[in-house]
Amino acid sequence: MGVFCRKRPRADAGMPIDDMLEGLSPDQWEQPSLCARWRVRDVAAHVAMTPTAPTVPVLAAALVRAGGNLRMAGALIAIDHARAPNRDHR
Image (cartoon, rainbow, N blue to C red):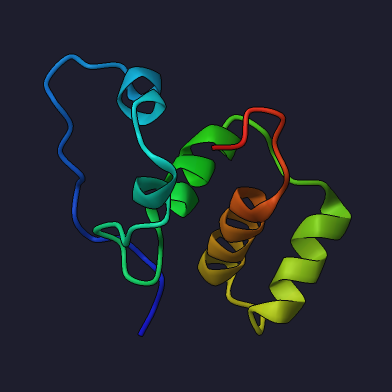
């Protein structure tokens, strides 16, 4: 089973994602998302890290862990990003 999301999550129309996520409880951050094997936290990290390209060493390490699969490497980087400490950690 992959970690890729084929469904489009539905949010309240017009609600900015930061407003939607800010109201989540710690338990809600850990709930499964519509994407297989991804928690809400992982999806939020994936969206948050999208404008930030990973460094070459981070990408290379993820590609090794993913057996050369670029899509899987991107998913692993997003999950790692979700696990990273954050000063606004929920």
